[in-house]
Amino acid sequence: MGDIDEAIDRADQEAFTREPPKSAQARVNFLIRQLKTTKAVALELGVTQRSVERYRTGERKNPPKPIADRMDAAVRARWQPQVRKRRRRQAATATGITVETRAQFGYTAPVGTTDDGRFRRLTVHLPPAYARRLFDARQHGAGDQQLRDIVAEGLQEVYFKDGGRRAAGLEVAFTNIDYFDVSF
Image 1 (tube, rainbow, N blue to C red):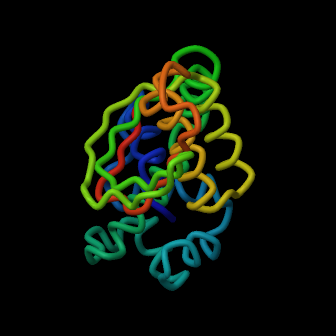
Image 2 (cartoon, rainbow, N blue to C red):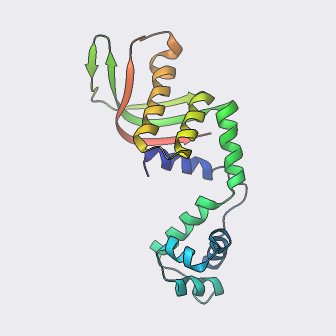
Image 3 (cartoon, rainbow, N blue to C red):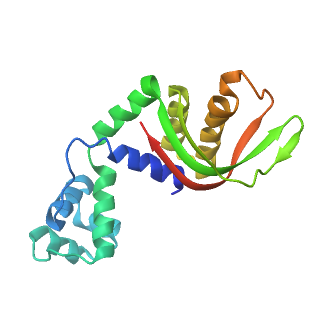
């Protein structure tokens, strides 16, 4: 999972209308309802099937931190799918997304290229078309580089070219991402 995937997941989780289950027993029961078997939950969490059964009955209550973290991540990944879908649809059709990043950019322009060794910190609102492309690419299994290209193209058009008012032949690419966050 890349920087952009993780940022989209974090933004998705901001849309929750209710908190996910907190206790190990409630989390495991939720996962069993989603995945249908204790064996599937055990594979997802990287524990034995018997451990899942113990968490389910409440016999074990406090999993070790790595297992608790995996439980939390598995639950959050499946929590309130309709709420997430509605938020993404709204961003892709009406509101767009806001990208906040600290990154190095490489440029190609008619006069030449540059690596531009300094980091830039940008907060840019991208129109719904870029949100739609980003969500569609992610849904179809696009890799991190493809997602970066979509975001870089959006930043190129909105920020660097200012909607076509300047830098006509400029092409922008991420060369290094220090920080990346998305909100929608």
